[in-house]
Image 1 (cartoon, rainbow, N blue to C red):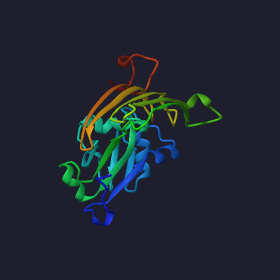
Image 2 (image 1 turned 120 degrees about the vertical axis):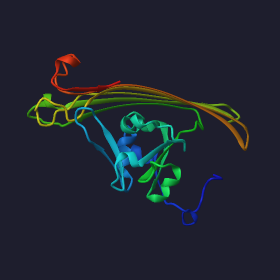
Image 3 (image 1 turned 180 degrees about the vertical axis):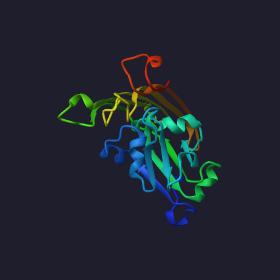
Image 4 (image 1 turned 180 degrees about the horizontal axis):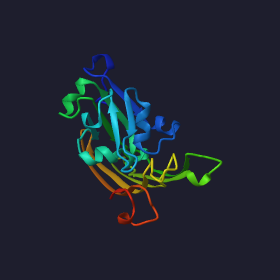
Length: 241
């Protein structure tokens, strides 16, 4: 890799999370995997709206910059909810820069920078994975637990001369709301999410490559109480689409 650099010669320290880390920790989305990097913590700050934020070196979410392939294309809303929208099967690695040196990437990168490097299709691969989790298992009251169902799909096709490649990523997630203390209000919001992404490239020569990325994210998130009622008939409902 022509972009490799010795750690001792680098002006900033870069920590890396690889797909192996996600597999070993059974992380389905990047918000779960980021907790395994030093100095990072993803926390849920609103039980009704499902607001998440990434804390770097103890600083709040607005002080962190999230990049995709080194480009700052995350909006402010995506920085709040996007951590649970991007599946780990789309990620080749995550590069984390903590501290003041990361401010070179932008004014809101004072706490640090998280750079999501997407997978490049390098061989013909077809993968399918289904995962079911149970949140808050209570054998005395199984009705108080919540199911979290996730299905992931990976497909990549590469031409015989390895100059052209196409990857397609599919991800769907359905999580029930979870009420930990049985007060009628959610501690974890209800999520219904479908994410589809594709990445295509063509190499003209050893130094020229054209890359095309496309993402489509469709999510409905709801928290509060009275999940069997319309929004306007409940005591509190916070929802986003």
